[in-house]
Length: 84
Image (tube, rainbow, N blue to C red):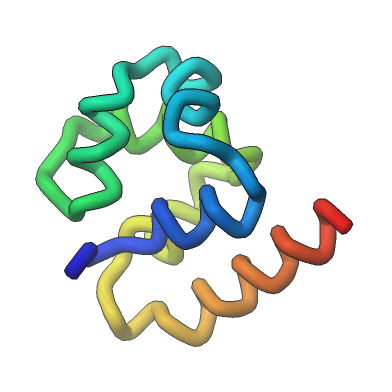
């Protein structure tokens, strides 16, 4: 079970792993690891945030734990609405 909301947020934006990897300048293997909740460098997190169109201040909502679930749900809803 992933410990972050990266995959859910990416899917809400209807973005493929390959597209996120390309926009972030990372490999798809790195995106797999990030989405699985594996540890990653801060620079990797920064690249993912920017590629998803988020601010650095959104890092806790995207990479945080279960305590951030309500905020993450609001972010996912906003992302889905902005794509409509």
